[in-house]
Image (cartoon, rainbow, N blue to C red; front, side):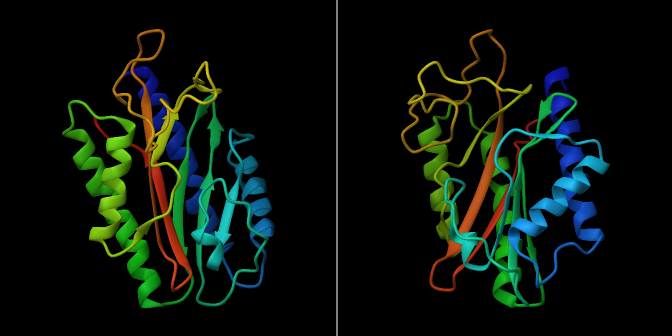
Length: 226
């Protein structure tokens, strides 16, 4: 594993520690708002040596789990038997992570199935990705939308992933350029090297929803290819 990938993995492990500690301390409970829980996680992050975040901090519950990253739904109160997901872009020792996890409060079988399905689908997509020799962002996004259907859900994300790196990570020269996103309009290979000839490192996002039941689940982390 090269130094860049190793640093990204370490940053991701720290983000996993953050989420695991939030769960272990019993922070994910009914009766508090999404924003209240988000603030608690930020305070916990400081305890763990995480001071910075490179994108907006997301805690979504109930019907808000239908919204993609760019959504801006009203703050909800977490309910009994709810489904909740986190999406935090932490920075640790100058390196970015982007981690998404879903939690089910209670024992609702459909919500538990959704949680399992997004985790299984992430592993399936990662295995598929590791076998590709050439792949555009559009082709990868199409694969994810079809994968959602095979699990009986709808893919709800505007993108299926993006790059991460040393903070702040590489940005396109043209803001309209989608080459650094797994996006339906990105027809460039996601295996292209950056402008310095270095390998790019990608986040894979799984966001499945059932709009009739008003629930969604989200799971994201680094592609595992080494």
